[in-house]
Length: 107
Length: 117
Image 1 (cartoon, one colour):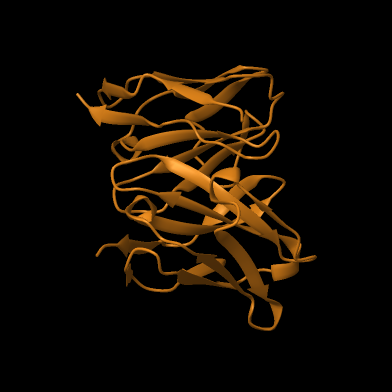
Image 2 (cartoon, rainbow over the protein chains, first blue to last red):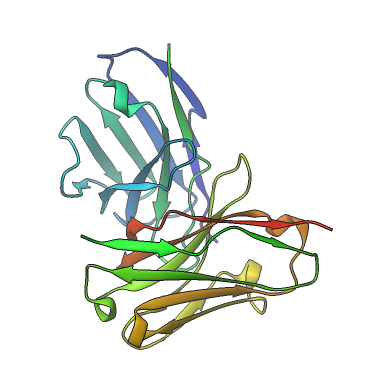
């Protein structure tokens, strides 16, 4: 199985900050990577597919990049609604696996 | 609008089975797969498997293979997951998600399954 490792596990930041979350795959997954946002007690919300393509309606302050084994999710200017847990997920081959999550906290 | 409405909380004894439903609406059911993902308390997301809304083909994670089954009823646009031989490790929130090409682009609200003696 392909292992997905996110860093950091927790990130403290302030409104207006630029933040970056990293996701590493244990083998080459091309660009077959998605990002999701989850708030406490809620279902995950789809943000990005194919490493860098934003879903409809996702604010442009979110961006994704990378290919192969290293990927990043960047939020250019943090807003109050962005404090949540973020997960990456590969869909290169079965089983699809998620990273362990990165919790973005208010500093 | 797209909706995936899941059935309610389940409390089960170890060794028994649970069946959770996921009623889809607001899109063409046959055009997407339905995936199932679970989240144990305080933990991350675990992909369990999917079923094609068109062909009924399935794919399961090895960890639950033989215990986990997904079906659909196209006439009611409802997907079902059944997990057998429950243990306390199966206590989790189970999500269905509309999926295309591996991407889970819309999620149900989740169903809490508690396994306890």
